[in-house]
Image (cartoon, rainbow, N blue to C red):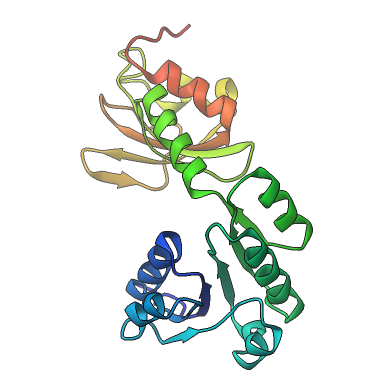
Length: 229
């Protein structure tokens, strides 16, 4: 198995989101610089991350001393201080950081971050709410990942009798739904190269990727209450 690439990360803001980012990166054995203006928060990470620093991320000289622009990835996870978040993002980009991931508090904040060059913007509370609602409305979708605003990857449980025993060719999945099946998990055995002759069993988990509307349509038809032509 190939070793995971080791990169260096800076995490600015050690609230709930930033703390979780730090812990996940450490568990993945990555090098982490943790930054916060609050001494107590920094002290919690002194023995956990590669380096923990008490600093104001709005101070350009301090960020230069920390060589922020040299990091592979910079997470801006400052909480309710939107001005500090914006300034930290702006400084990170000006100092040469190539991949700046920012937490936004609201839509206006997100728009500003996008305009000043943030490479990725996340809104954890909104995204979690959407995930919960999605799972409630689509109970057959075991896991899903929105790759962008239009494309979704999902793992869908098949329990429609009209699907069971049919081959992918017979179901004409690609032609009818315009999605790609990238894996089939059947009784715990994962087939990463499914072909047209593979037949589905009840409760198989099918990993698919496609436009979100097409994935949702396939999911609806794959449920036991659905009817097929």
